[in-house]
Image (cartoon, rainbow, N blue to C red; front, side, top):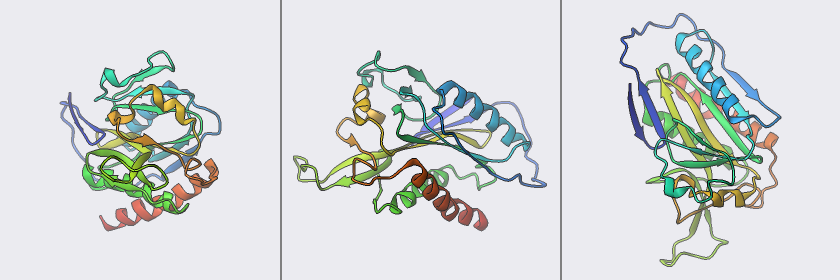
Amino acid sequence: MLHFVKCGIVLERRTALFAIFPAVYILAMEWIISEELVPYQDALDFMEARASTIATGTAGECIWLLEHPPLYTAGTSANPKDLREPDRFPVIPTRRGGQYTYHGPGQRVIYVMLDVGRRGRDVRRFVQQLEDWVIRALQEFNITGHIREGRVGVWVERPDMPRGSDGSVQEDKIAAIGIRLRKWVSFHGISINVDPDLSHFSGIVPCGIAEHGVTSLVDLGMPVTMEDLDVALMRSFKEVFEAHNAEV
């Protein structure tokens, strides 16, 4: 088994031989919204199973919107020095790309189980679509998201905060992205801060980036609910993924 890690992605390739057959039909994509907090292991077990059935063509693609109890996850590139408070919340090693991330109430987690093979087999393009998806959803609340070279995730400028020593505008992270691919099916995904307890991020160096902070929609002065964000995500998903999929 070979693992390739880049830009918050783990692409898994098994050494067993396999053949690719043209699809006879495509199953409908499913959206799941969980209202209760979902234990992390339960979510991981579901994603693993669903990704396998998507790969075999026995289940359709799936987007799962949920929240977790407070915890830290460690991606494949996590530096132990970035775990500042190891006893604060459960710390769960994962095989997704990226470093340390916090999950907790008030944060919308979006698990993305999509057939990237059917969608063009372009990993770089897929990550760009995830970024564009988040940015378009944020735009519905008059929030401008940015992608920065060398910094995975989506960032917002903070002109209301003190400038840096070089005079630059401070930037905070509002969304994290970390995925894994197996047999060209993605799982794990995105987290967007709606109204989490931002002090919980202090137990780690989020994504290994110490010189920038984190923010949320409510912290930016936008009284957005999970339901508001979910509607924006569903609408912008169609704009980004369905339009592109029609082109390939």
